[in-house]
Image: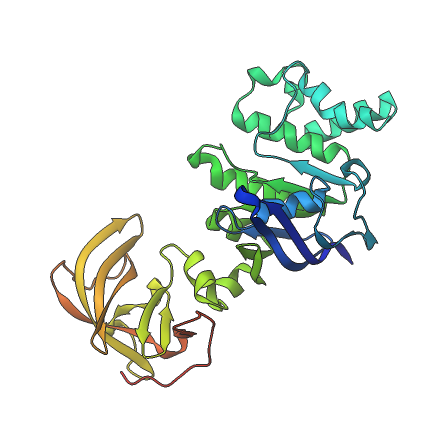
Length: 349
């Protein structure tokens, strides 16, 4: 069953000089029960507008929002059975943690005993029962994040909507926080939609990832789909660290991931495509070496990056020109003018 479905969603704002800004441009998207769907895109791509429209904080200019199979256009947020967590966490400073968690339940006239029971359940779930008597000013960023999540979960929402859920979390704790959030979602079985512009966060959290750009949906798929089979150069270069290399060849762009560009002797000769790489510099990053250089194809020089495992013993140094290669089945082809994925072509090499 589709927990959330948007159909032909358009949102237009009036910008400076009465110019119209199309924040969402015909978005069709659905998420199933127990699924974590991540909305990924650069700032201004429309992902937060989409989340707020699902929550009922924004009204669509055109299109429909369905929750649990019911059209909810025009219904206020409190009726939609959604749990929303915003980047600021929006906690009331004068209320205790318990008061913050119970507040939306009180607004819905939930009996006191049930409010207390649900608040305790949510606090236990997030590991913060010892904080129930404190006020937000005495909490760390991570503790405030947990309180905001507990408040959203106490309402037992049909879908949990998280806008930049890990913003402000210390970089050293982000991987652990991401894993904890994913484990929590799986344990509860609640549908979850997250917004982020961090592709590592998107790939780590999402069962599927929806990539938006300028209000349009570029691609929806599993993290592996987006990484291995991007539909265009926007997705190809948004996903991956370092991003996909794109080398011009006539009216096509040849794409390949940095980890597939290896010294030629490391790849069997059958089906490989070779290219001379002029090495500029090498970075040593934990278990990888990033080799920065240039390749010349058809009279054009293009910057590329190779990502080599530290276990590879091939000696390399800046200033060298070495023969590198890519397995033929790892090449992806795109239209050079429009960036769309195209059929493979045979390349000698």
